[in-house]
Length: 464
Image 1 (cartoon, rainbow, N blue to C red):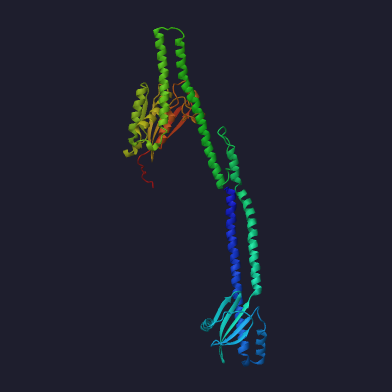
Image 2: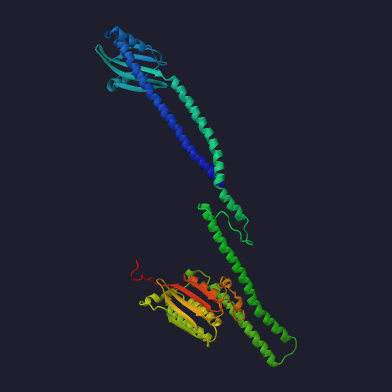
């Protein structure tokens, strides 16, 4: 069922319930008031009958005349019965079955006044003591006029309810259409968005209602999707280029070597060149494998408690072993009083790969005469490694893509590399709830900051 139809039915159901309760209330209380009012009129008729029949000999002519006038002002379908206390019928006037028996007469004696119904007829029985004896007077009438009005009210309420429901259904249909118009607009705009064009955004995102909030969330999702598609496209382009270059070199060298017989030294040179290109392909393949491994579920990685300073020194030693002519200076910005604040929880092998990649990147892009500087900073809840080099720097445009695999900035394409180090480090750090940040200034250098949460949080003195 469509939301518009559901809203219309819900709106109509709520209104129908309210209108039905209102109509039933009006009918019930009108009927109750009519009944009580008519009972009171019948009760008065009973006393008028008693005064006229039983007290006539005790009243002066004028009072007797007034009672007589009142007595002849009868109600519709009136029937009167007067009994002595012993049950003997003394007076009867009018047609109608009053359901009189000994049990009823005894009840009237006990309660002094009784009211009940016989079909549409209402009956009032009163106990009337007199100086000549005690009597029981029953007076009954049919409120024909009010009953007809009540029937008319019932018809009026029924047709009013049905007519109102028709109006409510039409109004609800229009109301739901207006209420869902923003959602309909969002749906129509979403249908125009496709994978080939993610630049379009929902227009209804400036308001403060729930639909505008949804549009803003959707636009943010589109931003992430567009960035992901762009990164994927960049990855495919750069990966194809990086893989094609050594393959092309290998094919070219082998084709040239096979064109004619060569000297042994020439074959050795070709084989050496091919071996270097094959090693390059192996490095690229290993890098892709490591990125895939770093993308697995974090819950499946075995973690242990590690000291960040020891891990950084191990990474420094590995980086220097790979680049013997490099210089890396590591120092503490603020050595903590509690050594437990140096403890992190993670996978030693993966974190070592991430830190080594960052250090090797800094070595690669730094001048030979300048050392790479690493600083260990302890914050309230995190530990940081800030690695600073003094290379050519990265442009602000290229900084947006430094975490895309195989991406390399334009100004460093002459330096050997594959563009895998930083993307791999970022994925490893995400698995450890950490982050990596890159800041760079052209011709001044680049600073990479690795942040990892401490295994135990410490609250500084003076803070709550």
